[in-house]
Length: 208
Image (cartoon, rainbow, N blue to C red; front, top):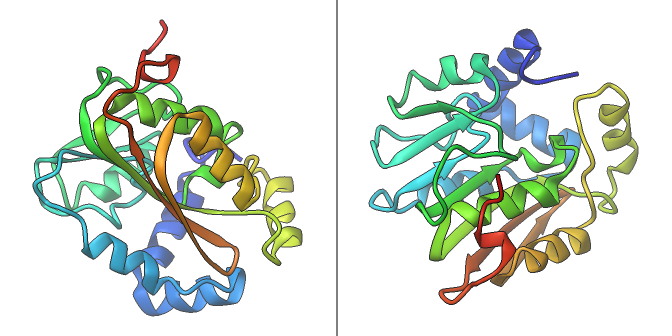
């Protein structure tokens, strides 16, 4: 199932996520996840930081701020996010239409587990980060008590190839990110990492 071509699924998902009581109940029931951690992280965002938010979904992390660039592959999600921001871009997370070292912060909430190659996506997000910039996000992980449910979503085509929390750390390290912090709640792992100020690697140079 492709989120870009499944508007009904995208709409239903966004309605559930935007409804706080419903999202709290669903996150706990499905993933044993306390979604208040996500809401606190979103509330703590620095409005002065030039931020890329991908996949932005219906705009859960978006504020009315021209320095917050909301991007998604799904046109349906972007239409819903338009309620909150005017800085919208339809973009592929594997091939972002931004120069290297553009953003102070990159956000990727609840999207990596939907991707076939989350490691490649993290490298591309690192590329567009400025030296010293922060990558922050959440993702479902294997090995946290919900593997059978994750495999069911994979079989239905809604999920890609989520790894374990250990895989996530390896992917971040491979992208040459530092100061990595992983915080687990149920089957969801939140992460933050920083792009080094002296990074000179293939991860920081886009190859056409």
